[in-house]
Amino acid sequence: MTSAHRDPDAELVRQCQAGGSAAHSSFAKLMDRHARRIQLRAARILGDENEAEDAMQEVFVNVHRFLHRYRPDQPFSHWLSVVTLNVCRIELRKRASRNRRHDAFRNDPMKPRFSELEGDPILRGWLEEALDDLHPITRECILLRALEGLRYREIAVRLGLSEPAAKMRVLRGLRELRARYPLHIVVEKDTDAD
Image 1: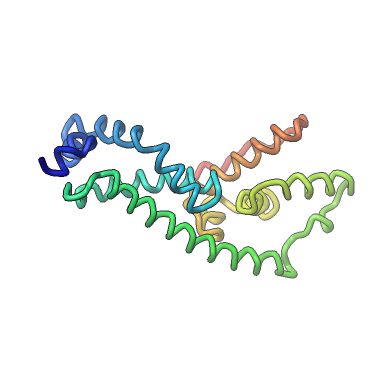
Image 2: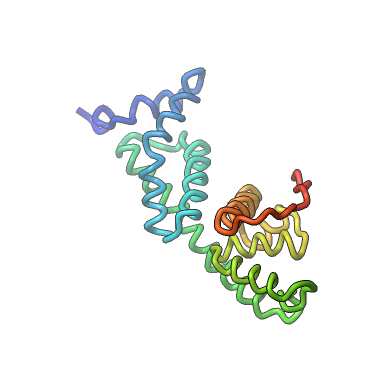
């Protein structure tokens, strides 16, 4: 009995590679079967749940794109682990690059500072403290969006993220702030559709 016959994913992979009407549902079943394991592995490597979720999505994209390259000489789960590891390595390299850019941005004398913002100093202090509680990348996304008025595409380029990841960071961060600090604040409707 070959490893392809023992591999519980072999038939689903074969259906995906063959294309046709069963390919989409077979791919969805594969991803459902392995999503939690991918996310846990990515979280262990990256040390961050949000980044692990983003990495899992990237793994799905890569698997879909490169599934035709998979050969059943090893179990599909092994190949999936290699894809996950590669996505995480790329993310760690991006993180190092982002950290260098963040350090440069943080030390930039032209960067807007909360102390320079007009308004109530108590509110300024509260806002600075609330933002400090967020994940550093999420905080930077919100600051670039709110203070500099950058579009999600520009935020993504500046921070080395995908555009959907930048948008998701802003939305998650604002949701987190609303949950932690339930204030009734009217925020201008987000009109950045791109």
